[in-house]
Length: 384
Image (cartoon, rainbow, N blue to C red; front, side, top):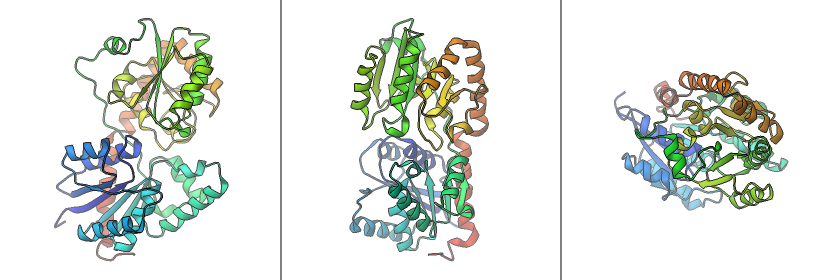
Protein backbone atom coordinates (compact mmCIF):
# COMPACT_ATOMS: atom_id res chain seq x y z
CA UNK A 1 0.00 0.00 0.00
CA UNK A 2 1.74 3.15 -1.23
CA UNK A 3 -0.26 5.65 0.82
CA UNK A 4 -2.77 5.83 3.60
CA UNK A 5 -6.40 5.02 2.79
CA UNK A 6 -8.49 8.17 3.15
CA UNK A 7 -11.64 7.48 5.20
CA UNK A 8 -14.54 9.85 5.84
CA UNK A 9 -16.90 8.83 8.64
CA UNK A 10 -20.29 10.57 8.35
CA UNK A 11 -22.84 10.86 11.16
CA UNK A 12 -25.57 13.44 11.56
CA UNK A 13 -25.34 14.50 15.22
CA UNK A 14 -22.38 15.25 17.49
CA UNK A 15 -24.29 14.38 20.66
CA UNK A 16 -23.61 11.47 23.03
CA UNK A 17 -24.98 8.17 21.73
CA UNK A 18 -24.06 4.71 20.54
CA UNK A 19 -23.38 5.72 16.94
CA UNK A 20 -21.25 8.69 17.98
CA UNK A 21 -19.26 6.51 20.39
CA UNK A 22 -18.70 4.03 17.56
CA UNK A 23 -17.35 6.77 15.27
CA UNK A 24 -15.04 8.04 18.01
CA UNK A 25 -13.74 4.51 18.59
CA UNK A 26 -12.88 4.12 14.91
CA UNK A 27 -11.31 7.57 14.64
CA UNK A 28 -9.12 6.98 17.68
CA UNK A 29 -8.44 3.27 17.24
CA UNK A 30 -7.61 2.87 13.55
CA UNK A 31 -3.90 2.68 12.71
CA UNK A 32 -2.87 6.14 11.51
CA UNK A 33 -0.04 4.63 9.49
CA UNK A 34 -2.66 2.82 7.36
CA UNK A 35 -5.67 5.14 7.49
CA UNK A 36 -6.25 8.89 7.31
CA UNK A 37 -9.57 9.34 9.09
CA UNK A 38 -11.75 12.45 9.14
CA UNK A 39 -15.35 12.93 10.30
CA UNK A 40 -18.31 14.88 8.93
CA UNK A 41 -20.99 15.81 11.47
CA UNK A 42 -22.66 18.83 13.05
CA UNK A 43 -20.18 21.36 14.39
CA UNK A 44 -20.98 21.63 18.09
CA UNK A 45 -21.23 18.75 20.54
CA UNK A 46 -19.29 16.28 22.66
CA UNK A 47 -18.26 14.22 19.63
CA UNK A 48 -16.58 17.13 17.83
CA UNK A 49 -14.84 18.18 21.04
CA UNK A 50 -13.42 14.70 21.58
CA UNK A 51 -12.38 14.30 17.94
CA UNK A 52 -10.51 17.59 17.90
CA UNK A 53 -8.83 16.68 21.18
CA UNK A 54 -7.20 13.70 19.44
CA UNK A 55 -6.39 15.70 16.27
CA UNK A 56 -8.98 14.08 14.01
CA UNK A 57 -10.15 16.52 11.29
CA UNK A 58 -13.84 17.45 11.59
CA UNK A 59 -15.85 18.76 8.64
CA UNK A 60 -18.97 20.57 9.91
CA UNK A 61 -22.20 19.75 8.10
CA UNK A 62 -25.84 20.38 8.98
CA UNK A 63 -26.97 16.83 8.21
CA UNK A 64 -30.68 16.45 8.92
CA UNK A 65 -33.82 14.92 7.45
CA UNK A 66 -34.25 18.16 5.52
CA UNK A 67 -30.68 18.59 4.31
CA UNK A 68 -30.65 21.05 1.43
CA UNK A 69 -29.22 20.57 -2.07
CA UNK A 70 -26.47 23.00 -1.06
CA UNK A 71 -25.48 20.66 1.78
CA UNK A 72 -25.33 17.75 -0.64
CA UNK A 73 -23.23 19.77 -3.10
CA UNK A 74 -20.84 20.79 -0.33
CA UNK A 75 -20.45 17.17 0.74
CA UNK A 76 -19.78 16.10 -2.85
CA UNK A 77 -17.10 18.81 -3.13
CA UNK A 78 -15.50 17.62 0.10
CA UNK A 79 -15.31 14.03 -1.15
CA UNK A 80 -13.78 15.16 -4.44
CA UNK A 81 -11.38 17.75 -3.00
CA UNK A 82 -10.10 15.39 -0.29
CA UNK A 83 -10.00 12.47 -2.74
CA UNK A 84 -11.76 10.26 -0.21
CA UNK A 85 -11.27 6.54 -0.85
CA UNK A 86 -13.96 5.21 1.49
CA UNK A 87 -17.13 6.85 2.76
CA UNK A 88 -18.49 5.18 5.89
CA UNK A 89 -21.93 6.41 6.95
CA UNK A 90 -23.59 5.79 10.31
CA UNK A 91 -27.32 5.83 11.03
CA UNK A 92 -30.34 6.54 8.86
CA UNK A 93 -30.07 10.25 8.04
CA UNK A 94 -26.33 10.26 7.39
CA UNK A 95 -26.80 7.01 5.50
CA UNK A 96 -29.11 8.70 3.00
CA UNK A 97 -27.21 11.94 2.36
CA UNK A 98 -23.73 10.48 2.73
CA UNK A 99 -24.38 7.63 0.33
CA UNK A 100 -26.00 9.95 -2.20
CA UNK A 101 -22.95 12.22 -2.02
CA UNK A 102 -20.61 9.24 -2.45
CA UNK A 103 -22.57 8.14 -5.52
CA UNK A 104 -22.50 11.61 -7.10
CA UNK A 105 -18.80 12.09 -6.29
CA UNK A 106 -17.98 8.59 -7.59
CA UNK A 107 -16.19 7.77 -4.34
CA UNK A 108 -14.60 4.33 -4.86
CA UNK A 109 -16.00 2.58 -1.76
CA UNK A 110 -19.12 3.22 0.31
CA UNK A 111 -19.93 1.40 3.57
CA UNK A 112 -22.93 1.91 5.81
CA UNK A 113 -23.37 0.85 9.45
CA UNK A 114 -26.83 0.25 10.86
CA UNK A 115 -26.75 0.98 14.58
CA UNK A 116 -30.04 -0.85 14.99
CA UNK A 117 -32.68 -0.93 12.23
CA UNK A 118 -35.00 1.52 13.92
CA UNK A 119 -37.50 1.95 11.12
CA UNK A 120 -38.55 -1.72 11.38
CA UNK A 121 -40.12 -0.70 14.71
CA UNK A 122 -42.01 2.36 13.46
CA UNK A 123 -45.72 2.19 14.22
CA UNK A 124 -46.64 3.56 10.80
CA UNK A 125 -46.72 0.81 8.16
CA UNK A 126 -46.28 3.45 5.46
CA UNK A 127 -43.05 4.71 7.05
CA UNK A 128 -41.72 1.18 7.47
CA UNK A 129 -42.29 0.40 3.80
CA UNK A 130 -40.86 3.77 2.74
CA UNK A 131 -37.59 3.33 4.64
CA UNK A 132 -37.19 -0.33 3.69
CA UNK A 133 -37.55 0.67 0.03
CA UNK A 134 -35.11 3.56 0.44
CA UNK A 135 -32.47 1.40 2.11
CA UNK A 136 -32.92 -1.29 -0.55
CA UNK A 137 -32.31 1.32 -3.25
CA UNK A 138 -29.28 2.82 -1.49
CA UNK A 139 -27.82 -0.67 -0.99
CA UNK A 140 -27.25 -0.86 -4.76
CA UNK A 141 -24.40 1.65 -4.44
CA UNK A 142 -23.11 0.39 -1.09
CA UNK A 143 -20.27 -2.14 -1.11
CA UNK A 144 -20.96 -3.44 2.40
CA UNK A 145 -23.59 -2.86 5.08
CA UNK A 146 -22.33 -3.47 8.60
CA UNK A 147 -24.79 -4.83 11.16
CA UNK A 148 -23.81 -4.62 14.83
CA UNK A 149 -25.71 -7.78 15.77
CA UNK A 150 -26.61 -11.01 14.01
CA UNK A 151 -30.26 -10.33 14.84
CA UNK A 152 -30.15 -7.09 12.84
CA UNK A 153 -28.40 -8.79 9.93
CA UNK A 154 -31.08 -11.47 9.73
CA UNK A 155 -33.96 -9.02 10.27
CA UNK A 156 -32.67 -6.66 7.57
CA UNK A 157 -32.30 -9.46 5.03
CA UNK A 158 -35.74 -10.90 5.87
CA UNK A 159 -37.41 -7.48 5.54
CA UNK A 160 -35.70 -6.81 2.21
CA UNK A 161 -33.65 -3.85 3.45
CA UNK A 162 -30.49 -5.14 1.75
CA UNK A 163 -29.28 -8.30 -0.02
CA UNK A 164 -27.53 -10.97 2.03
CA UNK A 165 -24.27 -10.70 0.07
CA UNK A 166 -23.88 -7.03 1.05
CA UNK A 167 -24.39 -7.57 4.79
CA UNK A 168 -21.51 -8.21 7.17
CA UNK A 169 -21.60 -8.72 10.94
CA UNK A 170 -19.22 -6.64 13.06
CA UNK A 171 -20.49 -6.58 16.62
CA UNK A 172 -20.19 -3.48 18.76
CA UNK A 173 -17.32 -3.34 21.19
CA UNK A 174 -16.17 -0.98 23.91
CA UNK A 175 -12.88 -0.40 25.72
CA UNK A 176 -12.54 -1.97 29.13
CA UNK A 177 -14.11 0.69 31.39
CA UNK A 178 -11.66 2.34 33.75
CA UNK A 179 -12.52 3.75 37.16
CA UNK A 180 -10.57 6.49 38.94
CA UNK A 181 -7.79 5.14 41.14
CA UNK A 182 -9.48 6.60 44.20
CA UNK A 183 -12.97 5.38 43.26
CA UNK A 184 -15.11 3.87 45.99
CA UNK A 185 -18.76 3.00 45.71
CA UNK A 186 -19.36 4.62 49.07
CA UNK A 187 -17.76 7.86 47.90
CA UNK A 188 -20.04 8.02 44.87
CA UNK A 189 -23.04 7.22 47.06
CA UNK A 190 -22.13 10.13 49.31
CA UNK A 191 -21.74 12.43 46.30
CA UNK A 192 -25.25 11.47 45.14
CA UNK A 193 -26.69 11.70 48.69
CA UNK A 194 -27.83 8.09 48.60
CA UNK A 195 -28.86 6.54 51.92
CA UNK A 196 -26.27 4.11 53.26
CA UNK A 197 -28.74 1.21 53.26
CA UNK A 198 -30.24 1.94 49.84
CA UNK A 199 -30.43 -0.79 47.21
CA UNK A 200 -29.38 0.90 43.96
CA UNK A 201 -30.82 -0.06 40.59
CA UNK A 202 -30.11 1.90 37.45
CA UNK A 203 -30.45 2.26 33.72
CA UNK A 204 -28.45 4.22 31.14
CA UNK A 205 -29.73 5.51 27.82
CA UNK A 206 -31.38 8.27 25.85
CA UNK A 207 -34.85 9.08 27.18
CA UNK A 208 -36.68 7.85 24.10
CA UNK A 209 -39.45 5.36 23.33
CA UNK A 210 -36.89 2.85 22.07
CA UNK A 211 -35.24 2.64 25.49
CA UNK A 212 -38.46 1.77 27.32
CA UNK A 213 -37.82 3.75 30.52
CA UNK A 214 -41.57 3.93 31.16
CA UNK A 215 -41.61 0.17 31.75
CA UNK A 216 -38.45 0.51 33.81
CA UNK A 217 -40.34 2.86 36.14
CA UNK A 218 -43.31 0.49 36.30
CA UNK A 219 -40.97 -2.39 37.16
CA UNK A 220 -39.35 -0.29 39.90
CA UNK A 221 -42.82 0.40 41.32
CA UNK A 222 -43.37 -3.37 41.64
CA UNK A 223 -39.90 -4.11 43.04
CA UNK A 224 -40.22 -1.41 45.68
CA UNK A 225 -43.19 -3.23 47.21
CA UNK A 226 -40.73 -5.92 48.32
CA UNK A 227 -37.65 -3.73 48.72
CA UNK A 228 -38.72 -0.37 50.18
CA UNK A 229 -35.14 0.97 50.49
CA UNK A 230 -34.82 1.09 46.72
CA UNK A 231 -33.25 3.97 44.80
CA UNK A 232 -33.36 3.98 40.99
CA UNK A 233 -30.91 5.99 38.89
CA UNK A 234 -31.95 7.10 35.40
CA UNK A 235 -28.83 8.21 33.52
CA UNK A 236 -29.32 10.03 30.22
CA UNK A 237 -31.47 12.73 28.70
CA UNK A 238 -33.87 13.05 25.83
CA UNK A 239 -37.31 14.11 24.60
CA UNK A 240 -39.27 12.00 27.11
CA UNK A 241 -37.72 13.42 30.28
CA UNK A 242 -40.74 15.50 31.29
CA UNK A 243 -43.17 12.68 30.51
CA UNK A 244 -41.10 10.18 32.51
CA UNK A 245 -40.84 12.53 35.48
CA UNK A 246 -44.63 12.90 35.41
CA UNK A 247 -45.02 9.11 35.34
CA UNK A 248 -42.62 8.87 38.28
CA UNK A 249 -44.90 11.12 40.34
CA UNK A 250 -48.00 9.18 39.26
CA UNK A 251 -46.40 5.99 40.58
CA UNK A 252 -45.44 7.68 43.85
CA UNK A 253 -41.74 7.17 43.14
CA UNK A 254 -40.55 10.78 43.30
CA UNK A 255 -38.45 10.04 46.41
CA UNK A 256 -37.00 6.87 44.92
CA UNK A 257 -36.02 7.78 41.35
CA UNK A 258 -33.17 10.15 40.47
CA UNK A 259 -32.99 11.61 36.96
CA UNK A 260 -29.29 12.37 36.56
CA UNK A 261 -29.24 13.59 32.94
CA UNK A 262 -26.23 13.12 30.67
CA UNK A 263 -23.10 12.31 32.65
CA UNK A 264 -19.40 11.85 32.05
CA UNK A 265 -19.03 9.45 35.01
CA UNK A 266 -21.27 6.71 33.61
CA UNK A 267 -18.82 3.91 34.48
CA UNK A 268 -18.72 5.04 38.11
CA UNK A 269 -22.51 5.18 38.27
CA UNK A 270 -22.87 1.69 36.80
CA UNK A 271 -20.20 0.39 39.17
CA UNK A 272 -22.25 1.31 42.25
CA UNK A 273 -25.48 -0.30 40.96
CA UNK A 274 -26.66 -3.49 42.64
CA UNK A 275 -28.48 -4.31 39.38
CA UNK A 276 -28.14 -2.72 35.95
CA UNK A 277 -31.41 -2.75 33.99
CA UNK A 278 -31.95 -2.49 30.23
CA UNK A 279 -35.62 -1.94 29.38
CA UNK A 280 -35.28 -1.28 25.63
CA UNK A 281 -38.03 -2.28 23.20
CA UNK A 282 -35.42 -2.90 20.50
CA UNK A 283 -31.66 -2.62 20.14
CA UNK A 284 -28.77 -3.30 17.81
CA UNK A 285 -26.07 -4.06 20.37
CA UNK A 286 -26.42 -1.67 23.35
CA UNK A 287 -23.15 -0.18 24.56
CA UNK A 288 -24.46 0.51 28.07
CA UNK A 289 -25.21 -3.20 28.48
CA UNK A 290 -21.67 -4.09 27.42
CA UNK A 291 -20.29 -1.55 29.89
CA UNK A 292 -22.30 -3.10 32.73
CA UNK A 293 -21.05 -6.57 31.77
CA UNK A 294 -17.45 -5.33 31.62
CA UNK A 295 -17.85 -3.82 35.10
CA UNK A 296 -19.19 -7.16 36.36
CA UNK A 297 -22.58 -5.85 37.37
CA UNK A 298 -25.65 -8.12 37.55
CA UNK A 299 -27.86 -7.43 34.52
CA UNK A 300 -31.65 -7.62 34.09
CA UNK A 301 -33.03 -6.97 30.61
CA UNK A 302 -35.82 -7.72 28.20
CA UNK A 303 -35.06 -10.75 26.02
CA UNK A 304 -34.99 -8.85 22.73
CA UNK A 305 -32.87 -9.55 19.61
CA UNK A 306 -29.36 -8.19 20.03
CA UNK A 307 -29.47 -8.35 23.82
CA UNK A 308 -29.79 -12.14 23.75
CA UNK A 309 -26.51 -12.33 21.80
CA UNK A 310 -24.74 -10.93 24.88
CA UNK A 311 -26.90 -12.06 27.80
CA UNK A 312 -28.14 -15.60 28.37
CA UNK A 313 -30.86 -16.10 30.97
CA UNK A 314 -29.59 -17.65 34.21
CA UNK A 315 -26.08 -17.88 32.71
CA UNK A 316 -24.93 -14.27 32.42
CA UNK A 317 -27.98 -12.29 33.52
CA UNK A 318 -31.72 -12.35 34.14
CA UNK A 319 -33.96 -11.94 31.10
CA UNK A 320 -37.61 -10.92 31.04
CA UNK A 321 -40.51 -11.13 28.60
CA UNK A 322 -40.22 -8.12 26.24
CA UNK A 323 -42.28 -5.04 27.13
CA UNK A 324 -43.64 -6.71 30.28
CA UNK A 325 -42.92 -4.59 33.37
CA UNK A 326 -44.03 -7.37 35.72
CA UNK A 327 -41.65 -9.85 34.13
CA UNK A 328 -38.81 -7.30 34.31
CA UNK A 329 -39.56 -6.71 37.99
CA UNK A 330 -39.30 -10.45 38.66
CA UNK A 331 -35.96 -10.60 36.84
CA UNK A 332 -34.65 -7.77 39.03
CA UNK A 333 -35.95 -9.46 42.19
CA UNK A 334 -34.29 -12.75 41.24
CA UNK A 335 -30.95 -10.97 41.28
CA UNK A 336 -31.62 -9.04 44.47
CA UNK A 337 -32.92 -12.03 46.43
CA UNK A 338 -29.96 -14.27 45.52
CA UNK A 339 -26.86 -12.08 45.64
CA UNK A 340 -24.46 -15.02 45.33
CA UNK A 341 -26.13 -16.18 42.12
CA UNK A 342 -26.15 -12.58 40.88
CA UNK A 343 -22.38 -12.39 41.42
CA UNK A 344 -21.86 -15.63 39.48
CA UNK A 345 -23.96 -14.37 36.57
CA UNK A 346 -22.09 -11.06 36.55
CA UNK A 347 -18.73 -12.85 36.51
CA UNK A 348 -19.83 -14.91 33.50
CA UNK A 349 -21.08 -11.75 31.81
CA UNK A 350 -17.70 -10.10 32.25
CA UNK A 351 -15.99 -13.09 30.63
CA UNK A 352 -18.41 -12.95 27.68
CA UNK A 353 -17.53 -9.28 27.27
CA UNK A 354 -13.80 -10.05 27.13
CA UNK A 355 -14.35 -12.92 24.71
CA UNK A 356 -16.57 -11.12 22.21
CA UNK A 357 -17.18 -7.41 22.78
CA UNK A 358 -13.90 -5.57 23.27
CA UNK A 359 -13.31 -2.42 21.25
CA UNK A 360 -10.13 -3.80 19.70
CA UNK A 361 -12.06 -6.62 18.02
CA UNK A 362 -14.53 -4.20 16.44
CA UNK A 363 -11.85 -1.77 15.26
CA UNK A 364 -9.69 -4.59 13.85
CA UNK A 365 -12.60 -6.14 11.95
CA UNK A 366 -13.57 -2.75 10.49
CA UNK A 367 -9.97 -2.01 9.49
CA UNK A 368 -9.72 -5.36 7.71
CA UNK A 369 -12.97 -4.64 5.87
CA UNK A 370 -11.65 -1.23 4.76
CA UNK A 371 -8.38 -2.73 3.56
CA UNK A 372 -9.98 -5.69 1.78
CA UNK A 373 -12.38 -3.49 -0.20
CA UNK A 374 -9.60 -1.08 -1.09
CA UNK A 375 -7.07 -3.78 -1.97
CA UNK A 376 -9.60 -5.76 -4.00
CA UNK A 377 -9.31 -3.15 -6.70
CA UNK A 378 -12.57 -1.33 -6.05
CA UNK A 379 -10.60 1.91 -5.80
CA UNK A 380 -9.23 1.47 -9.32
CA UNK A 381 -12.56 0.43 -10.85
CA UNK A 382 -15.41 2.42 -9.31
CA UNK A 383 -18.83 0.77 -9.34
CA UNK A 384 -20.76 4.03 -9.37
